[in-house]
Length: 185
Image (cartoon, rainbow, N blue to C red; front, side):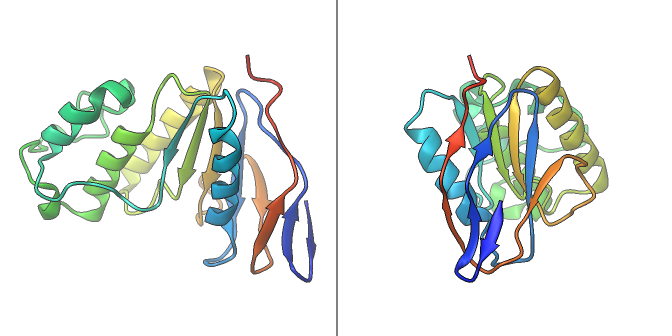
C-alpha cells in the first residue's frame, strides 16, 4: 500500500482464510469506497460473501420477529434471537421505528451475516452497540475466523480488533489494482 498526491492506492489485497483486514482512518477518507471496489471484484468471482453495510435497510413498520422470520434462512444462525446478542427481556414484537440505533444494528447484523459465506465484509459493525454486544460481536468474528472465514472490517475504533490494519491517511481512495483470493477453495 502506498499513497500519492491523488489519494491512496492499494496495489494488492490478499484475502486469506482465517485472516482479517481492518480499514482504519478518519471520516471521508475512503474506507467505504475501498470496500465498494472490493465488493465489485467479489461480485464477479465465485467467492461467497456477506456484506453488512453501514446503512441499515430495515422496514420501520415491521417487528424484530418479522425481520428475522422473513430473512432468517439467509442470516447467521449464531446471531439469532437465541444468542446472547439479544437480551432475554427483548420484546421481538416491537416495531423497528421504535428501536434504538443499537437494537437496529443488531437486526442489521443478524440479517446480513451468513455463516456459510467465505468472506464477511463489515462496514462499522460496532456502531451504536453497547459494550456487551460489542464483546459478543468480537467473539463471533473470532469464531468465524477460526472456522476459516475471512473478514474485511471498516472501523473507527482502532483498538477493538488487534489484526492487520490498512490505515488510510489521504482523502480519496482511487483504485485497488489487484484483489487476490487464491487461497479459497
